[in-house]
View 1 (cartoon, rainbow, N blue to C red):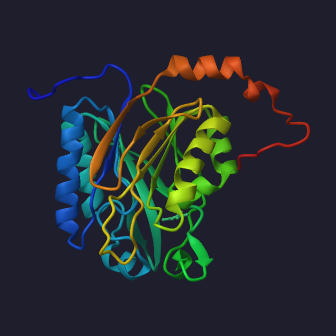
View 2: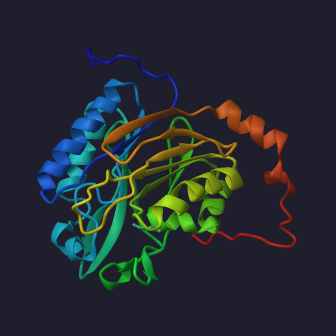
Length: 282
Ligand SMILES: NC(=O)CC(=O)C(=O)O
C-alpha cells in the first residue's frame, strides 16, 4: 500500500476495461494487474467486465466454464482481500451440474463472497446481415435479482442484456440501490446507438449512478466488443467514459447529489402505485 497515491474516503468506482484473449490464465493475470493499478489510484470498488477471463461467444462458454466457488473465484476472493476492496468479478461462464450460466460474483474487502448473480435475460437477438446471437443455445438464465450491501450504499447488479429491461433496474431502485453496475459486452451493431443511451436511461429513470463495464475491443475476435465503459450520474450525464481500447475509468460517487436530484425532481414520491406497481418476489 506504500505506492498508493490517493486513498478515497468515499466510494470511488473503477471500471476495468481489459482486453480478453484466448488464454484464461493470461486474462486473469492481466486483468488483475489492472485491478491493482486501479487500487493504487484510490478506487474502493472495482468492476471487471462480462466474461473477463473468457472470450465472449457460445463456442467458448463450455470450455472456460468453472464451478463457483472454483479456480477463478478463489483468485478474485484473494485479490479483494489483499487489496481491501469491493471487487465485482465481471462475469465468468459458470458450470452447475449439466447447466451453464453467465455469472457475476462480488467480494468484500475481507474476501467474503457477498453475491453470486446469474444473468437473467439472455442475449438472443437476430438482426439479419448484422448479428445473430442465441446465448440460450448454451446458457441457462438466472432467476434472482442481484444486489449487495457495502459500507457506502446498496449496489444493484445486472449483466449486459439485463440493462435493456427497465423493470429490473426499477426493482433494484425500489430495494434501495443507489448505484447500478452492469458488466457487459455490447458489440459493433448494438453498441454505437444503444449502449450509452441505455446507461443514461437507467441512471435517469432511477436517479442513481449507473455504470457499465465492457471488454476492450479486439477487431480480430469473433465477437467484437464495443468497449466504451461508462459511468452516468443521477442527472443522466456521462461522468466517465472509456474509448475502445484497454483503459480504466474512475468515478467518485456523490451521495448528496443523488439526494439533491431526488428532491428536486421527486419522481420516486410521485409514482402512481395505484395504477402500476412493481412486485418483488424473493
Ligand atoms: N452480451 C450481451 O448481452 C450483448 C447485449 O446485451 C447487446 O444488446 O448487445
